[in-house]
Image (tube, rainbow, N blue to C red; front, side, top):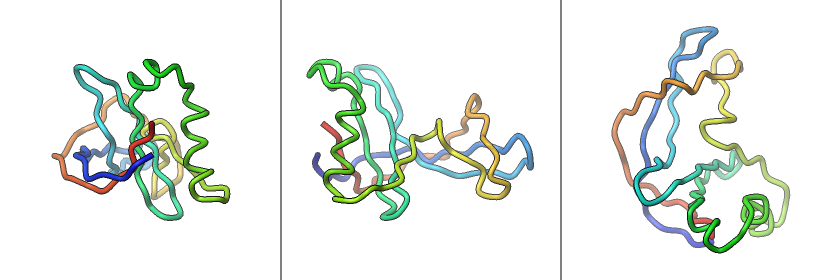
Length: 113
């Protein structure tokens, strides 16, 4: 696991229950690789998992995610984005089938290997 400055996409969805927009960031998948985005809620840190690299190295996702817990030395709440996102207004589950993108920025994030 290493920390780097990498691009992340700024996104939003409208809550299906209260219609309020919920903003979030995630690493996009594209040609040549698929990424998963994880967010640690206490320290507000982003983690990027390269699924192609995990497959190539024959590592399962649970083993790779264990790095976060081992690194922090105590249990943390890790949220998989966008799958585990909830509305910040009414706490209902979000419909992630129509994510809208609002540009890109660079952030400091951990690369899971």
